[in-house]
Length: 115
Image (cartoon, rainbow, N blue to C red; front, side, top):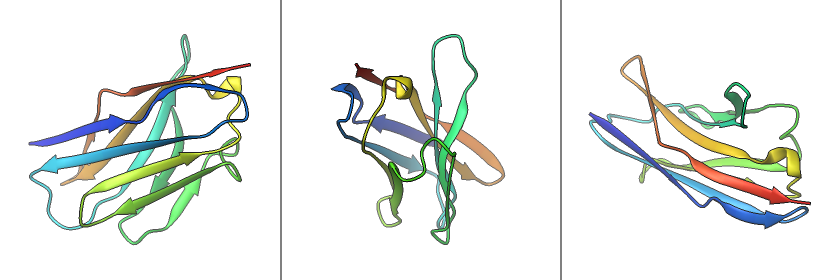
């Protein structure tokens, strides 16, 4: 089994910053792709940023230039540094890890950006 736990969400004013963390634990061998996703009320869950086992990154257009995804392979941890936050970034942010052809998700962390 694999467990995924996100942290770091909260309430921040527009223009502020937050750093989300996601720790994966359990039956994990090697380095695996990990990603951040978000789901706003009444909307589908969308990709924010992903990072491969080799460290390559991809971002959704709205995150480019403002968010940075990074990872610590030793700790099986992925981070999402979010700067210049906007009210439209308000959502529950989820993390996942791809292990043995299966995606494992965390419970999410709420990010609220006030105008």
